[in-house]
Amino acid sequence: MGAKLPKVSVFEADEMVYIQIVKKKLEDAGVACSVSTKYLNTMLATPTATALKLEVNINDEQKAFEIIDEYLQSKEN
Image 1 (cartoon, one colour):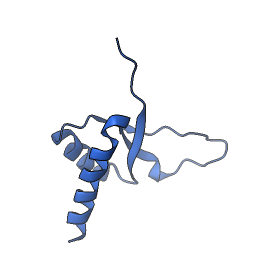
Image 2 (tube, one colour; image 1 turned 90 degrees about the vertical axis):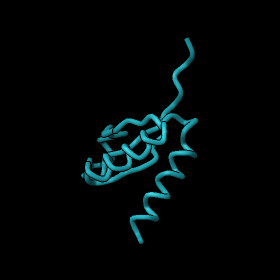
Image 3 (cartoon, rainbow, N blue to C red; image 1 turned 180 degrees about the vertical axis):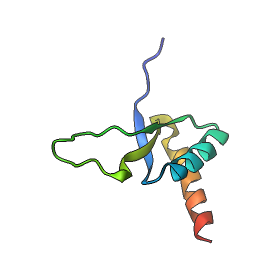
């Protein structure tokens, strides 16, 4: 059994609807992802509404950023 790959955060949003849209786009492209609401240090940082993050395996990071960039560019037009 292989070691689990580390996960990296690739997208943050303050509303779950945006997280779900990007999550669906990543999954449709074959990139497994998960939603994280973990706080790294609640002693130093007050949890805020922007604590929603999408995480992917480190090997999928580049592909995920390409998909997210494409989505954000299409949203601007």
